[in-house]
Amino acid sequence: MAKRNIEILLTKNVFKLGNMGDIVKVKPGFARNYLFPGGMGIPADQAAKRQIEILQERAIAQDKDRKSQAERMKAQLAGVSIQVAANVSHDRQLFGSVGARDIAEKLSASGIAVEANNIALHENIKELGKYEVRVQLHSEVEVTVKVEVVNADPNAVGLDEVLEAATAPETSDDAAAADASAE
Image (cartoon, rainbow, N blue to C red; front, side, top):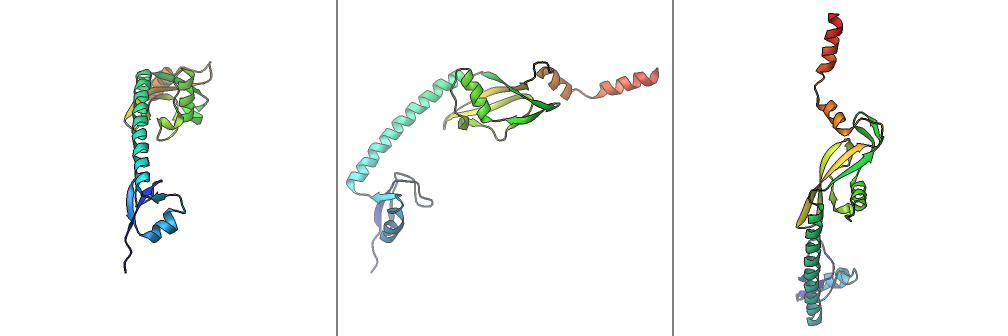
């Protein structure tokens, strides 16, 4: 005799079964031996269903509030440019690197509180230069911030000069050698 499936309200995301708040039908043994002891589900009676509806309504309202806060923060961050000073080892290479935490600290110092995990860097910045960094404020709201990584040494050559020297063709050495050989 086959036992019927029972309805379970998931309290956590369960891989290949459903997300928190979903009502799923499972075998009684699976619920009794895996879901209930792991705190991943509860029996889906009327009280639990009503409780989940209330929690989902609250979650939607909280998400709407977070999105409006993210929109306000996006307006503050629009067009923001920050400078991060770093120690340089050779030419444009940094001793360490500039990461999301460093950028978040600079933004916080300028009066805009952004979490480091909101800054989307694929890899840390390891050279002097100008970069555009994406800041994900909400799942639907993102903004781009300009980051300028400069030499921390106050006596060092300016960033524009370093970038110009790096992109300029090396014909000046050839011209100087030609002038020396002509004399």
